[in-house]
Length: 241
Ligand SMILES: [Fe+2]
Ligand SMILES: [Fe+2]
Image 1 (cartoon, rainbow, N blue to C red):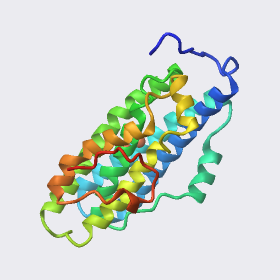
Image 2: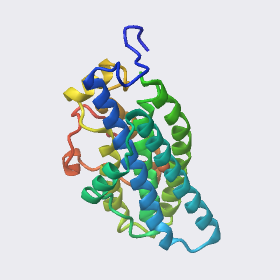
Image 3: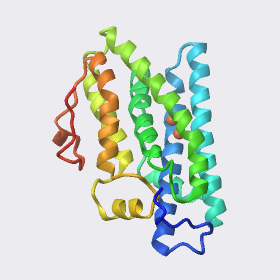
Image 4: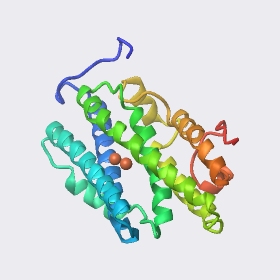
């Protein structure tokens, strides 16, 4: 971290904008972690073997732990619970639930991967407690998305999902990309300037897309034309597989 970036130990010494940006980061992450726990919890109905039951319960448990860890940090920081904010946000903006085991794997592959790349932007966060909390979460997210990818690749290669794989891929690709927020905006620039995050969302999107390419190829999928995603993404993104 550049030495010119100030490190604030307490909430009181932070400029208002810094404090608000940091609180927004915590709230958004809390929302995403609990949304993931709910989505994978909903997915229990698609499980038909003990092996996958154990795996899914483990995954739901980890997402719940992530939520609780962020919620504890938020409460320690603000003196208030994040639960009401997250509950309201989930009511207003629910994450769509997967409708099949295949779709659940797609969600794990893309939604979890979005979170994984986004959190890496905070791993040198200028607020030290955030760094500690997310270090462990990043390691666990690495496992989630890796497993989701393996399942999706295996299932795509059976040929059984040829009809539905591309639309489901595009749907969850969009939800994964939404983790990064809008590229090149004022809020982004401020967060980078004060060391709360590393880079602009556009740069993170590129890493995410590049990381997906080998699996996209193995699955026989294709990236949609960016306009079809209905998202603001930089024109310079390299989608070539
Ligand atoms: Fe998580
Ligand atoms: Fe996860």
